[in-house]
Image (cartoon, rainbow, N blue to C red; front, side, top):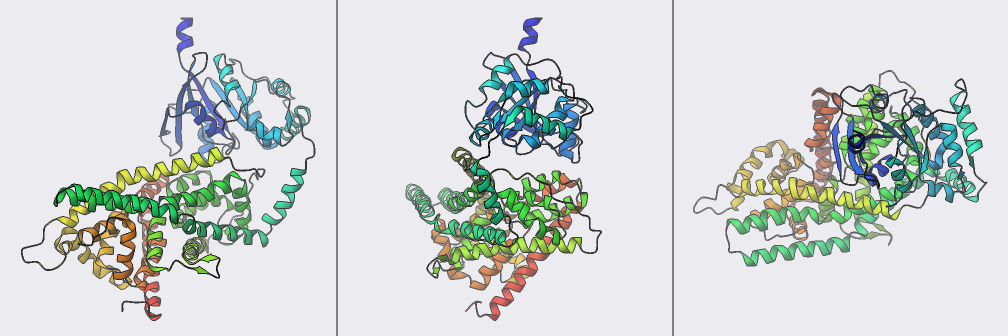
Length: 620
């Protein structure tokens, strides 16, 4: 019987404040042996992984949502509280709680550790980022802290491959008793934290603290801080075009050469058309924009790793409050610049239901990475690649303007949604981490994951829709004696001409109308759809570099600007609408979101088209 018990997996749960490195530790321990689902009856994500300790003990590890307190104020915190207490229906109580703390910010994180220890369940306290704490001059007496909390305390460095070795050794023979805190039960929690910090830690005064204070005086200044933020964003979008071009040219040459090789190897016919004009032209035209997407995320990851992004959230809180938004909306909206789906899911941390709903409605307005291939194609086709004053890239300036239009539009929509309603004050309380040099490993891992996600979309959604569009563009074949392009007689041409009366007031062509349809699945598919349509239409194009002159030759500048304006607002993403349905529990908000975004997109495109015509930028 004893042997059987020892071979049963240990049920352990990771718990901790947001941004304590808990998920990094989970990834380090479990690797790829993870399963992601949702807790029954709620939209909160459930992550479980498996691993084996050096002594051969199997462990089932649950990564609980981040929580600032077990006095829950959000769905995430409620799930964490109930699972830790063994009260969550359908979820067995964990045999061991592993409470992860940020060693560089014990003043905040020890409060939560005390709450966990007082649950009366076997607990291990893990101090993450212990190396960073020691570099800052912070010395932590682990045995003394362990005695005070009544639970084992170990240090880890979750970003290092062997950084959890002490924790793994402890899990071979985990504690089976509840913590016994060496403190007066009537002592106030803040007083207990202050006493623990005094008795268990020591930090000499270091020059870096004075440097951080000096930096914050500029970065958090209400005027100069905003100027710094705008300058960083401006340089970031300049880099998207300037740095990426050599790599894009290399990728484009490779795609074109591969397409030409396939064209030479295969005889003329449907198979060659499918491979060259459907799959290679469709997928290759999107893949070429991967360098720009990675450069954009490189900047975001560096700013996040350095500790700047929380300061940007604090800086923008006053502006967001003037539009009727809580500062808590900043992080979900910032996440939406990568993709609106995780941004909408991040709104679970917003306690006020009205603020949460408004943030969900605004998330699709943020310029997600799926829009970048569309913007890059249109900007390259219609905006000359030249510098202004010898320093500013004109194409990067236009991209910066598109992002700023989306942000200002979101603030305007938030103000309209809140106008006339009861205004509640929700002060922003957040942790400002210490400045630090970005971890090269973390940045590289983040870029790798973003590349994998993007290429998986290319290999699934984009290729599938490109093949479907190729079929619609190829069949039926033109009748005998037909003089026009073959696509005019196809199903795609027929659909495009039916849609044209609706979109003609925006300056759209029927080819654009065709590209909008597969773009509903994912915005970037519109780029591969255009490549497929023009390739089947008899144009000799195998890669993105040949699509750009086609658009600049066949469309007017007014049409290009109108389509850019459309994509600032267009609700063309089924995944976003699906997650809104899941998070709000009904279709009402989905229809509201799609309706107002379509209305804004149509109005913005119409006004842009009319303005461009008045400026003489229309068809000649």
